[in-house]
Amino acid sequence: MLKDGVDLKNIRRVLVTKLRHHGDVLLASPVFSVLKAHAPHLEIDALVYADTAAMLAGNPALSQLFGVDRGWKALGWSEQARAEWDLLRQLREREYDLLLHLTEHPRGAWLARLLAPRYRVAAAYPKAHAWWKASFSHLYPLPSNGRRHVVELNLDALRRIGVQPGEGERGLSFVPGDEAEREVGRLLGEHGLARGGYIHVHPASRWQFKCWPAQKTAELIDKLQALGERVVVSAAPDAAELELIRRIAALATTPFADVSGKLTLKQLGALTRNAKLFIGVDSAPMHVASAVQTPVVALFGPSGEFNWGPWQVPHRVVASDHTCRPCGNDGCGGGKLSECLSTLPVSAVLQAVQALQPH
Image (cartoon, rainbow, N blue to C red):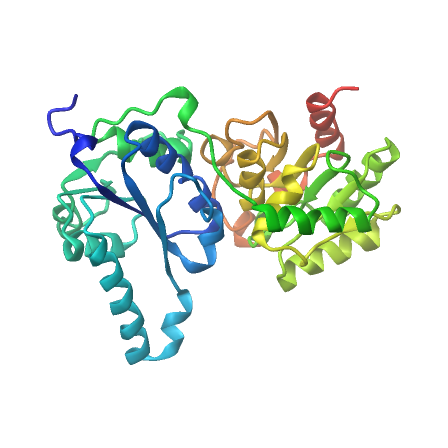
């Protein structure tokens, strides 16, 4: 037991904050399962951006889920203040004993002070001001070499207070729900597809520099279907993502089931859970595939698989040997096109697919 460790038997309620994008929120889900496994009596709440709440909704380890609406800023000062005050009031009513803040967002430091839980945990970011450091009772270091998966970085918040995650406790959790399963079952029926009888391809990302060229995605789909596979393609209801799917459809010589822009996040999870294989780039849907235990072929370019790769699921990562990667840049020279990703051959992806489902 650490000298300044926290005895969970003396804790009643915990607030975990993760104010980032969808995939980041999902990669924090093991924090909830580990806490619940070590202290089943705990009430564990989460604070996330409202649009990412679906990533945690239905999590069996979660008691309450609170959201910060990014749209509050557009309401005007008085309405935003009212919404913020109402959220703070709700959080205060929960009387937390422990706060785990998993990002560098300043809201976490403010909540540490305004909610005043006995224990307050956050990372010791290298450029953090003294005000940040003084806001928390426990600070944990970040690795200097950068080669640590984000799931483990999140779990470091627990290690810092003496909670050691077990090997079988670190899996991601995403719950599609019965309603999503029924809707996806209906969609599959419309396309003449059986559960477990198709490959799910999600080629898009909100970040253009993470996307594989449309021509290569179309060629991959054609080759998969020539091998007798059925392919379902999805994308978010975003104009740029839908345009990518339109280009892929125009270039492909074989028709595929296109559900792009038609699914909620929960339905996307159900679609992936019922697929035999998932193929995609570094994006939230790839992490969903890991969470629902569908084998993954992931294409990586400027982002690093050491930090963001498929987690605890059968997988293959397809990446180039460019010595400059992972650079994290918005494409080479900031030009939105990543050479390390765009040059990946279709043959390498096919080999990864065949390695995961040998015939």
